[in-house]
Image (cartoon, rainbow, N blue to C red; front, top):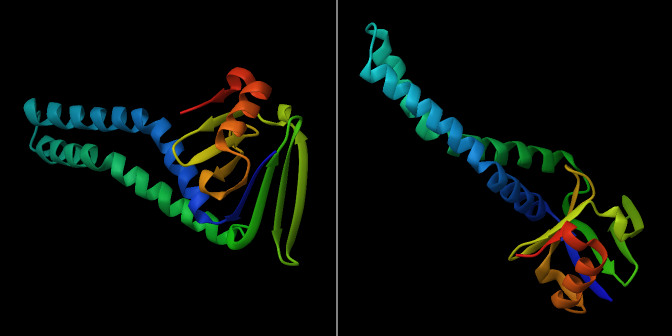
Amino acid sequence: MVEFRSKLDSNKSHALLKRTFKKLLWLCLVMSALLLLIGVVALVAPEDGADLAVGISMIVLGVAFTPITYFLALFIQSRNDKTAIFISPETEEVYTFDERSITVVQTRGELLSSTLRAQYAYIYRAYEDKNYYYLYISRIQVHVIDKASLTQGTLGELNALLSANLGNRFKMK
């Protein structure tokens, strides 16, 4: 049996945001490159005086597009975290993994008490990185488990359980 005990705070949603943004980084970079290309073309082959302003504006936007997108996503995530009452340092999570199932218990005093017991088929995909496990139950719903919150068993045991039960749906770092 492997067990993790942690708090459901905004650190987990920020870790998920960073993971998601890394996956979409190529799209942001392509958009930045397109904006830069439009700006350069407007500067190199101007048709009128307005093209100079358009060219400079596109180049500035192209350079700033990726960081602006990231910080906008951070801002939106922070606002979402503030409105979700269950995302709080007061919310405790316990993840237990055994040979046949996963149990997730979330509690926050009298406000929240939730227990989920599911077979491994519940997990759509799972990923491991340096600090976290990401257990996707759909393309957009995910449980984020901080490796530092391990209280029983070993990370190797969990990797073996996930590999055995998920096969190629589990990707290790």
